[in-house]
Length: 549
Image 1: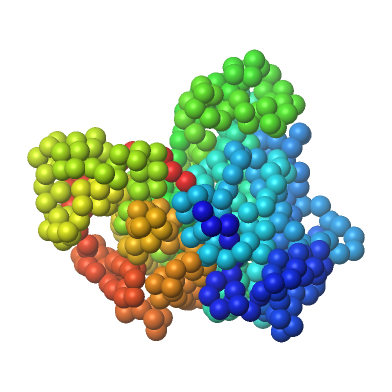
Image 2: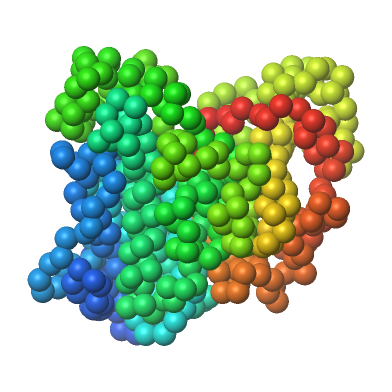
């Protein structure tokens, strides 16, 4: 396997080459020509001044606190205000991510190199520390003056893992599109999504603490981003996978209203959240696991973080279900996207979509046999995953094979299961948004076939994300990367994703169902792709989401 690589792509690699450079506490591994030298950059926040580094014309600030401590007496409570400081605070080192299982995406032996854009890890994307006190964010900007569109990236990893560190490598997106980019770390898993409110009123907000962290970060953006050249009145939130689920939930949270004006959900259309009864049963199981009585909930604040995490993570924990947002009657007053889109964000335009073969990563990674299915295996596995009788499965296979006559059984399995799950959720979200009639939704379908490991992973779950960030590993992805990044930035700028590099992308409607298909060299709009299959899937009960990031 090649050495893990990092944030720069294309010609930038030749511009930053061999010797380490240290500036303002930032170590950049690689050579730097004088015109691209890193140097200090100072910005003002409401808490005090911060020192970042200007690299290649983009000013990067890392690990800026947007909330106070969340350990000990702050555990399970809403975020507090960030502390103020005297002098200048260093913001050149990657801040802590939430406590989680070891590892990160950049070290993955299959897709890590793709996610890093195939470059050396100059900014330490693969070096992060974990801490319960993780309420920090990163800012990338072309300049500290001006009023640019602000794009706030909310990371994936479900509600249990991940961080916003990948955005630190998106300097090319920031410079090409002249936008300000923010990424957020926040509380996850047991620390961010454990509801204790039915056991003690002190913790009434604990079930959505991780979501309230995101609200606090957006409030920080509103109050401070003008000092980084951003427009606080023009903020777009976007997230992939679990990040898309967090965006979906934020759109139903009264506390988030007015903190963003546009939203993008990538392969993460979450239509429902848990209820208090389900969440309370999980909390009781956590207490029992730790030997704490239900009337002694405060003792959870005294459990060492590592012990608390270990007791609630992994297949042997015995804790039912996974954490995530809940209807607590407070920060999330009612179900988020079911039976309709949240009226509270009715005027917020959206982009929503999915990847063609989401499940190569979400199913195939854990079951290699799916990559070598024969015809009998295809139908057997689809009957299980689609949740339909054999006659329906045969009809669905026929629909896809008529469009892709050379597809292997594995090709069809991965596309059908992906469309049955992630794509149908995206379509349902776009339908419900469209029915409100107050702001457009734009639908996309990502089909670029990634070439890693002889094309094994195809258009896998999360495959579009590094291309949005302009972190391009393979030359044949350059064109679709430019199309994606420019579309996302155009949408952030004015609520419409159209630009010169793509054909006319019309807002979703229930008659034509226009969908932008982002492929290789040529992206195009198709009306209602795989219409017959969509109609069949729409008549079935909602699919169970396969495990994944």
